[in-house]
Amino acid sequence: MAARSPVQVGTRWVGQRPVLGRTMDIKNFLSESRAVSPVIGVILMVAITVILAAVIGTFVLGLGDQVGDTAPQASFSFDYDGIDTVTITHESGDAIDFESLSVSETSDETSSTVDNDGDSDGNMDAGDSIEVTFGGSLVDGDEVRLVWTSESGSNSATLQTYTH
Image (cartoon, rainbow, N blue to C red):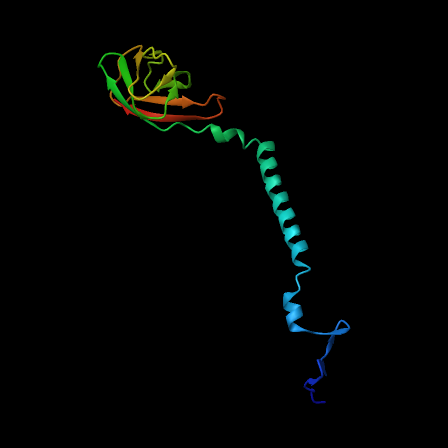
């Protein structure tokens, strides 16, 4: 059976195949946009649901608390007097609360005292220094570490290390 080509009779085409009970008009088919709005609405609702689930999930799992606990970025210099005191000077970088700083060293001398420079704002800013006095002198190979601990105590980082 050979396919018939449509023939125009007046304003209608005869011989076209009906689509859902009516003839298919290409112009009308391409310009029809009834289903666009519901599809876009569904896509937006799914996107909003995914974003809300991600935000709520981060706070429920406690991941939101760790965002603010990043170690400060700063540079320090160390000066050892040869006897029992190391002076640590903040060269540049973020201001750091004196309360969050501690000093540790690897020798057997475990006692140390930290004296800040009496800064009124309580922060170690560029140019400020602290003096650390140990119970004895440092020997070759001893390491002095400046350690920062977050306010919550959950994170800590070694900011700088001095090897004698």
